[in-house]
Image 1 (cartoon, rainbow, N blue to C red):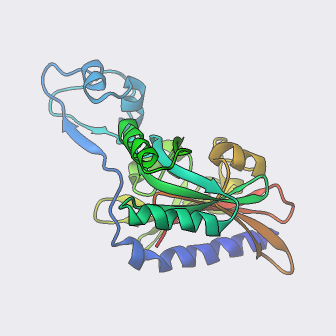
Image 2: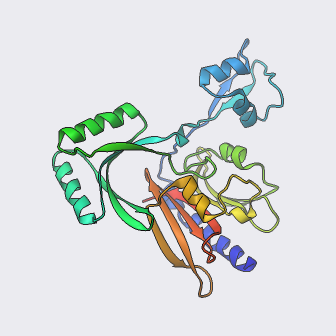
Image 3: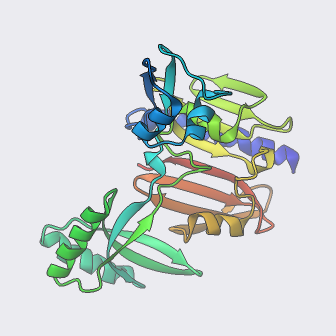
Length: 290
């Protein structure tokens, strides 16, 4: 079993490295801001100005006290990438053909929509989605527009961007270290870093955009992590991420079959592979979708 898991890490790392061409053309979603301390600045005044807690400022800048001096540089982390978004829904159907018909009607009226699959309690539903908005007021405007065009059952719901331990595609490498902690060993292979938190294997493998030091793909192996905030069981995955977009059965090792729970949102994809015992999380793999 141990040998197999190490083998799977090697295979996934190869896949991760092979994905670089596509990801290198994507935009980063988050950028840490660097500021220079001026005379009279305090952590309190900076926290109020940038709407961030003093503790987060200290954590991200590895400050042991509240003392700062003029000329010092501080990191202001970008937390916006994990804020909930407002999704406008123009109906949900058990048959894809019905969802496709509604999409065709709305597209003819100039309202761009797509069909998004959801698996709820083992049943597949097809949601007609009319956009995901960072502003609630914009989502409400879309709902009003849909209802004015005859979609009386239109509504909006909130969904968080896909993340692992509050790290998303586009987060900075500094943010990852703050959330996961400093590894005792790091191995570099071109733009891929393997982070070791236990001696048995890499707990994190991450592909970095070297231009702006942001994350393009993230793989996490809970068995090799010390952090307790990483879901290790299937039921915790559902509690953390909700109903998936797809569930698939795949070959994992020898003649065994494993389950993949797949989430897609806002051009990102999260694949969670469950061990053959049907309970244990083998890995989480977060990446951009094509």
